[in-house]
Length: 479
Ligand code: URP
Ligand code: ZN
Ligand code: ZN
Image (cartoon, rainbow, N blue to C red):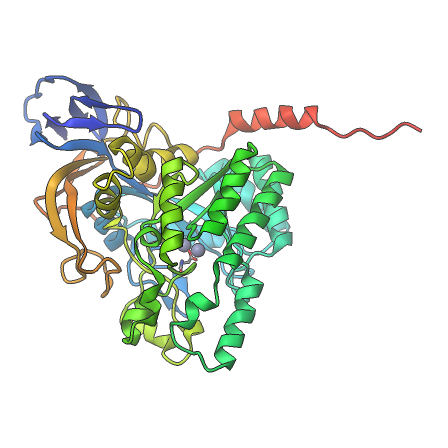
């Protein structure tokens, strides 16, 4: 299939230019002024619009088995919803259960994801430790294109990784040239606070944020950073929700440590008053971890994004419908944690980021696509409008408006955390692998068309780290 996108402004993370973009057989084959349309090409008129790399959501959980249920959005519906909002690749997570064979979990998730309609790739969670896990990490990096491992510092009694697991896994990751990522919350403290609140009779969703204060997140972020510093491994902290974790990241980066931070669209835009909503369904629909925070934290997160101390935006798309959330009607600890947003991330960030002047268009591209591609080593195949890149493209109409609602969204969940928000600036066309998959508000996707994307390890950077480590090699005192 050949597609010529004509008359738009190409916006990359590093620059903007007036240019046409020619796509053929899934790739971008030319970027330049007044390109000629090959015979039979589909022409897209992008006059007055922006032509940007398709979004990468580096944090989703499609059909995740979690807290006694399974997330309602599967890989087919979830990747389709992403395309409707201009997101052309997701990075999901393989999360083995306690003691579950890692490779068995890997194959299970790969099978589930085969129905994806856009490209996807996987972080793999390390939830327990023994020699087989050590070996599997090598197999995943060397044979399956995995270069990032995830650690949940919360969810005690389920998938929580304690310090021993962190140290073992971080050490193995550096040997393999992989990056480590963490969900930073002190799981022991959360467990204690949950119990105390419940015993006091505070059993509703209002207890959720009280049981997970920012200090729990700041402590865990700082702990993960210091462990990574000692072991000399690059670290990526997912879903930073508060000033405390941002400060830990900023401090480490100022000291020269390679630490990256992600922020969710929801944490930038929704505050913690939602947990005090009188309707249980509404309050429970917002239960996710870490929780939404007060305006003070939201302002700090925007500053983190603007200063470059936070590099990526994600959604942590993990949907549960009202009947699933009702599992925690009498006990907030049983409300499945998770909210959606893969469809809306780009439009809410454009509206509240670019239109308000907080972000330039180029910064928008960086934080919605390019930085994730670079951090997780798929750049410039993804995250770039350039010759040879995958033709994963969003044509963005800055004048289009829409009001977000669960009644009209494509996401397979009965609630939208951005319900009622009117945004100006939306995807008018989305291309995945050079095919138009979203136009005129309609999806045209094919089950299974999405490909698993291999991500190589970080060979050259790690070689440099080893040289540095050899220079600093301690020596015994001769006596
Ligand atoms: O509440 C959340 N975030 N659910 C998904 C699992 C996780 O912690 O990322
Ligand atoms: Zn998490
Ligand atoms: Zn998550």
